[in-house]
Image (cartoon, rainbow, N blue to C red; front, side):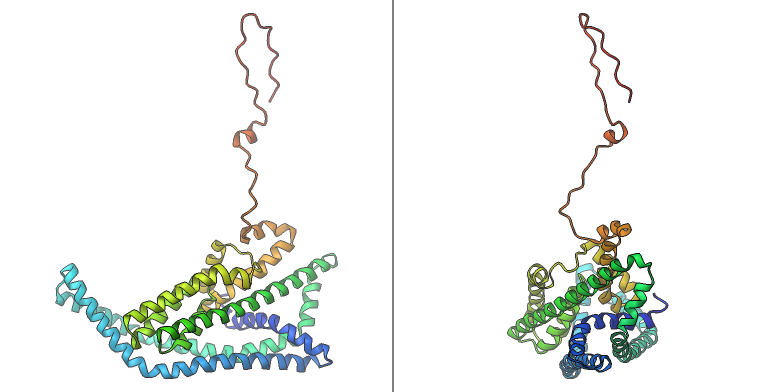
Length: 359
């Protein structure tokens, strides 16, 4: 998966998008439209929606470029204040602080070429993905009948009903989950933007949408969104506004976790928190940011497969979040010795006791 990520990542995103677009594609086909045209129109509408979202974000990013020098000045001032505080608090001489900063600066500059190369490769990969994902999505929608027959023929004929059931459940779970996430993301973006507009944040729309997108990454996205939003707000607003941005994000996240996520997304994907965190970390290690977004849908598909195949039920239990069932605990002594007979000492007038049964 790591070696073939340039092929598997766009193909995985295309697979998820094709599951979402199956409904409009089926709707158009029922209206006597050819499958090729129905798939093309579905993908085109999807691209229009994505383009509108990217347009609003890019327009905010273009205006943010004018404030980048302010960000550099404010960060330099913050570093200077931090240096003075460290000198006063820990009694470190200015010469040692200057030597430390020069060493850190030289190390940073030594890695500049590699950072630039990584950035260029990331941008080129993103551009390639933007071309490949729509093409893959269109082809998956066009040949979904062939793919379905392939999975059915890959197993024995006696398992055909089970394969049909698992594929149907997978489509339903992924479609419902992603649709719920989209609704949740829109609501979170509206709440973020409303809070930022009330605080008077300059780039309220951009930060609200970016924070909502990062919120899709479980447990990690909220911290990334908070740091990024506070850093950008720091360039154009007061420290009180920066603190207010953090408060807004935390309040929205609490509302999202306790109200929106259970109600909107629901229990479509019952995966416990431990497996979710581990899956997100593994996805990040293998595929980077794309792996973090794809981790939950992949685990949802695995959960459906594990629950559908009897020999894999144990793995489904490991991934699940059904904590209500209490296991029956059998004492260890009862497992080792099924029946223990306690023999009391006989008294003088008592008849002789019968020998205890064999264990």
